[in-house]
Image (spheres, helix red, strand yellow):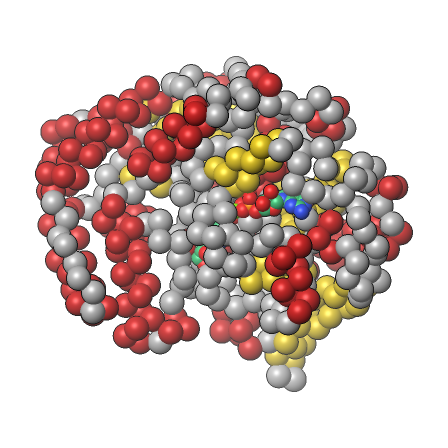
Length: 457
Ligand code: GDP
Ligand code: IMO
Ligand code: MG
């Protein structure tokens, strides 16, 4: 397979059918991640010239299925399978060079071209070092062991939180551009490693685990090696994006993680450490918000979550198990079983509002076939109070009971449907209910992982 041949014959036709306003477009998850953003970004890439990640890091796992080939992308934008496109890792992304290099090599090994022309990395993005990953794991473990099991965030262990924390702290941070400046990196890493060793040895003691201090020289050598390998990709992505847009080229922004995991707008503290809603596009790529004219909000036809935190519609029963099995709901990044439950429309409506969704993509609809009835959450009951909005306080969300509306189920399979009218009447009723409740049209319906298993309305 090569970038030029990954285009399935019938998807050109498919994507042409989607009407998009002139301007740039963002794709953002509206739940707790894994909604199928990778599939939609891949599908839309045909219509764009540049695909840009603006947040998160290797905590993301975006799956693209082409024919019988499956690609799991963690850092590289999901536009990489097309030739002639520029893929950008924006300043808001935290980059684990070891993971990135592994991913580049993995794609090349499968015949996909990845070079300095089609993969660009912002010199302002921050670098994840091995000590960030150690800190990530130890910190969550220490919180759970020393204080309260329920307080653990259940992070992906990819060093995301510690790297963003260092970005905010500044003195211990390293940016991608620094990898190309050996003198500066030496000073920075000597300082950072000394501070990390003090902190990590105390954390390890707290957890009762062995800790081998990090060696500054080893980290410096690693940084040099990463800089040498990634040099052809590193650039001022702010200038690059503005030059591309100035030249009339269209940018597709690929959100990682999802709106309910957004550090400001999600179910804090059970969130990730970046602005993963579409609001993050501006700060994470230096592209002003008004340039983004379309936001496609990606939502599963049901709800899932990995890691800790409230999830009012979670099903700890046979229906939940069935959704997990049929939807193959196991993490792309960590392999953890995902928590599954009914669609939470209060949450999706909130996310669509925050991310400014101009259209919805309803994903994994095929998974709900043959379940009857289909419950959707339309409000929360909190003691005597009925709550119609998404609460800011995660502890309130943890105490609420979902108020369900039961909708008729539909018989499957629907994974061969290619037009809206091919769907059973009850399936169309489910879609209509969602768009009326959320107030945003469902413009894409996905009925299987492949590109061609997509209905454009
Ligand atoms: P992302 O993180 O939002 O890109 O989503 P993930 O890739 O982590 O998880 C979505 C999973 O669902 C992947 O395994 C996809 O291949 C799969 N998928 C996407 N759309 C559909 C669909 O419509 N039906 C089914 N059955 N699977 C889908
Ligand atoms: P994609 O892009 C699902 C969750 C983790 C954890 C919390 C914090 O594939 O949708 P972190 O490692 O980011 O500090 O973990 O956020 N999380 C995700 N869950 N999909 C993701 O990304 C996620 N990224 C982070 O499970 O609960
Ligand atoms: Mg994922």
